[in-house]
Amino acid sequence: MRAGFIHGIRFRLVMAALVLFAIPWLAAQFISRMESFLRASQEQAIGATARAVAAALSDRPTRFAPVGAEGDPEGEERRRIVALFAAADPDAAASLGNAYVPSEEIERFLAIMGRRSSRLWVVDTRSRVRGLSGALSEGATKPRASWLKPVAALVVPAPRLPESDETRPARGQIDRALIGVSSTQWRGTRDRDVAILSSAQPIFVGDDIVGAVVVEETTASIQILKESALEDLLAVTLVVVGAALTILLAFATRLAARIRKLHAEADAAIDPQGRVRGTITATDAQDEIGDLSRTTAAVLARLKEYNAYLEAMAGRLSHELRTPVAVVRSSLDNLKAQPLAPDARVYVERAGEGVERLARLISRLSEGTRLERMLESAEAERFDLAAVVAGCVEGYRAAYAPRRFDYSPPPGPIAIDGVPDAIAQLLDKLVENADDFAAREGAIRISLAADSRRALLAVENDGPPLPQSMVNRLFDSMVSLRSPQPAREGGHLGLGLYIVRLVAEHHGGHVRAMNLAGEGGARFEVELPLP
Image (cartoon, rainbow, N blue to C red; front, side, top):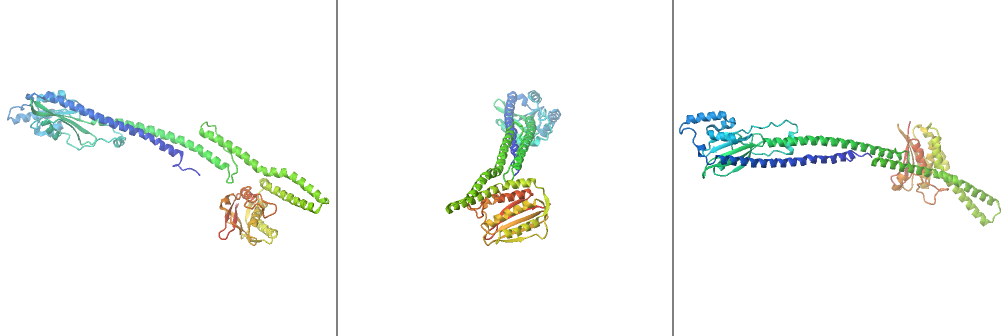
């Protein structure tokens, strides 16, 4: 039976190789922790920047003095318009409208203190923006296009934050700073993968809060770094895992092919009756499978030699026993010719009967060997199977009288290729077996039928059923269900049905035995292929 792919070595090696996917998962966890560390570092850096700017602007009341002359709205408007066009972040400046009232001194200071890719706001207590420097888009690197980006987003997703207006600072954070509460917070943008980190600090003049400074940065650089590292990791991992799976699959396929070849040779070397008919090719490979093939080939060779010895033993025994039996028989014949007392003659007669019985047993012992030799040397011929069976049945009616034989012939001749004498001997053994086990008054039923592909010869008898444990062994050598005191003269060695199997297999057929339904009895079938 051939193992399926799911239960095979290749599937199990592939499943074992999937452990390699733990490598990108572990690396993704490391990258996620790295991202958390970078975010925490960014929080500390932006908080320090906000405190430094707030400290530099504190205790300088002139920087928060009114812009231009009081009550000169036209001057303030002109100054706002000039500052609007000069702003580093025009979108943010434009979104402020009249709330953007820049101070030249504050903006010069912010231009010095500002950092690339960060944005600084200075707001007074009247919620007017007195200084704006930098833009969040400055220094931002455009993320590279990659087909692995969706996969990387699934492995380590970006933090999801509520979307906000990225052109303005967080109003709540400014309000808290104007009452003296410093804070750092994250908020989302229109780009779901990018967040804004802002830190707010109050500005003091003496003990009074005159404004607040807000420093903002995005996580774009961290996100790009994370995505680049993760995508590179995924690309390398997929290449490594793919190469590993390919190598393992090729290796497992090679192993499975070698094992399958060894299995096929071992399965074909032994026939269903346990006889060794083939060999196993030993390989020169120095691995475990090579050792197994060489050991199996050696074991099979020894088993074949032993089976050949057992098969030839019957012929050797019969040959060796014939001479002493002949000596005993001639000695008994000489004793019979001498004048003996009546009591002594009885013992001589019994000894003679025993010798004759022993001679018949020796003849049967070598019967299987003689039949095999005959089949090997005989030439196949085309003959009518129906005529051979019909002639044998007529002979049985005379030889086994008063036993009744019921024969169901086919409607016409059945031509097969084979040895007619061997087929007749096959039927002889089946009838002899049926006669031994049939009831005294019961009939032996013989039938022959054919279709386009095969001929079926069957012999039935009424009698005790066959033990289920012996049905598959009846056609082996030296197997018999007869009692130790055989019914027929001469004894049995369990070779009759074995001869039936030999003849059937020589003709390309097979035999089987089964119990009849009902009160009992057995049926033996021989199936022979038609030319």
